[in-house]
Length: 283
Image 1 (cartoon, rainbow, N blue to C red):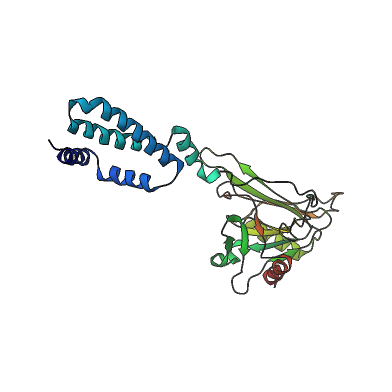
Image 2 (image 1 turned 120 degrees about the horizontal axis):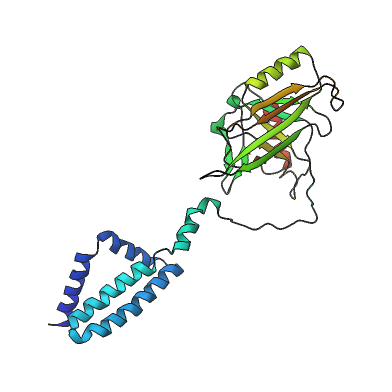
């Protein structure tokens, strides 16, 4: 049998025993320049040479078939993912993408401004909310529905206490956002707002004392943007010496609707542009 006929029969054997999808995958592997595929090609060549040499005494056609079959099989096996690679792929959403270095010239400062901004979650125009393409925690655009705004709730000193934390889940870890703030007014109008907050679903913007390594890039955080903040408790202790009988409100993510991540950062280009955007939200 001539070598060309032997080779032809070998390829016919390969095509009849390997699916089109496998051949297509092998083609993709061979065209890919990744280390994994290079490893597969080298392994395939070594195995093909070995089996071809061992079986060639039985006939040129058999040796050719052995060569091609060993090459294809070894490439498909070697270019597959290892168990550790499969495990790492399953955690793709949680893969660390960069390291963090301390900026000793801009040490972090704790705390927030006492004044907070609240709005009804339903008043946000979510179709206008934009995020940084490389960082989903960075909000670069936020608008309200027509006639709707954020409202200013003034505090004193450290009377506002925002926080967030992760919650361990069986399959997915989530987050809760929380805002404790105090009202130093007990008029009937204040009581009315307390009652509405207690029944409502709100989003809060707080201002950090730390302004960031780039001026303003850590200034504002948004709590509850994803699922809203619900009233955990609203109370007034009439004889409290701490707030002189003021009102304390705790807003928190509901257990049935947790956030996908920590608080969102609100920053647009620079500090001045961000401040302009905040002013628009308060109009």
